[in-house]
Image 1 (cartoon, helix red, strand yellow):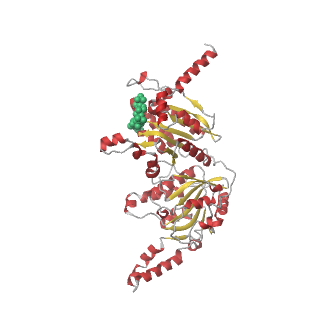
Image 2 (cartoon, protein in one colour):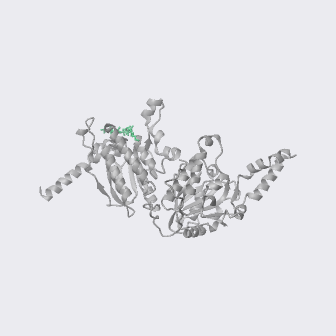
Image 3 (cartoon, protein in one colour):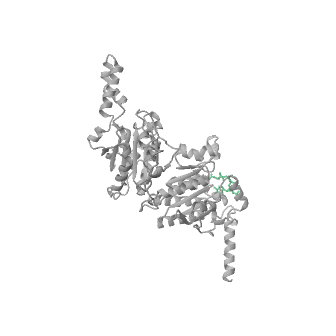
Length: 515
Ligand code: HXC
């Protein structure tokens, strides 16, 4: 064969493989508002930068007549490309080929691109659209998942791992996303569950739709398994690009520096956000936007455990991870879910050299039987562990209440914050004045002629003594009491001065966090 003939042969083979599951299956995919696997990759990477590998890999199934079937690319597309000018590894499961189910060679393609990503130290993006373990391949499918989970774990904290759920993600398929850093879901398209509605009906007799069991909203609002919610695939791809702008490409680097911009102070005036009434809630995201470059803030897990806000912004062009109590929801208390949410984010920032800014306004940990029985001790401890272990620059600003365990947990000096600043509105105490007065003056109040009058007097006494930042400042637990308008400049200075911070933890194999 001449070179021309061989090239023609190659092109014919490629055309055949690129057809995926064929026109009918592709139409079925489009009819439910889904793009094809290759279209998805093209929509994420920079134009004309995607290179596909292992197009001619064939499946290894032998049983149930599988040896007579041709599954193009074995139902998964793998390759490398550029994202905003930087290299990435990417794979996308092709639901049009055997429902994107994961057989042994399908898994080998994924693990090969994962190995590349880890060796080359570039981010990995996985697009999941699959019926789970390929039933006909039995234990080989399970082995394939195990190989993926193992690599997800090795890569954790070394390269960013992003999972995009764009279809069903059933059975073992959900555990790879769960081991990755950020999970993106799309309304009506994404479904994640270990056992589907059919199995639940058979085993438990309970009826539930796929959407109600494991749809996008469920995972953003209730389970906390997903980090970003989008209305369409296109919106989801824009979110991925935006996130990529904030994070470094691996754990030996810092995030890319952008030109610095001033906040939009007309929209977010830091002097007017907190009301004079200390009980009145406000949206802490307004405080973040009042201090970030261009008032830009990428919130993560926006719909889950809304009593805490986490996300990325920039200060002076550099990425900062924000953790902030949200007084708008449950007065900003820490509970099981908010502790989990914050602790994982703190560990992400620490692993990827992103400094942490913590904004504090909380009455403490949420009391109640539900919380105690749900393990608020164990979950609440995660935040203590994550802050204590983090060696990136840690700067804290106490805006208003910092009571009890909440004061310690929200990156106090005692957990090795580098700088702690407080606004004049800060109140640092073991608990709120009402609760404190009721406990320490219980006998005096009970014995008084007018108990309510004495109670109010004692509350005032306690407030005058502790409901301010100056007692803590007198012990050096606060480095400076500042006016709100000074916050951005002082934070920028504190971040600059901490930029070469080099703290080592005691030598150990690894710690044992309260998982
Ligand atoms: C083999 C599969 C498959 C699978 C789907 N297909 N899932 N083939 N193994 N796991 C095939 C179908 O036979 C069909 O092939 C094609 O993919 C499209 O599937 P449909 O059912 O027609 O599509 P749809 O109606 O959209 O339903 C999608 C679905 C459903 C909800 C995902 O297919 C489904 O319930 N699949 C099984 C999900 C599941 O229970 N997986 C768990 C596996 S066990 P044809 O040839 O007809 O086009 C597991 C454990 C791993 O994952 C544990 C590791 C820790």
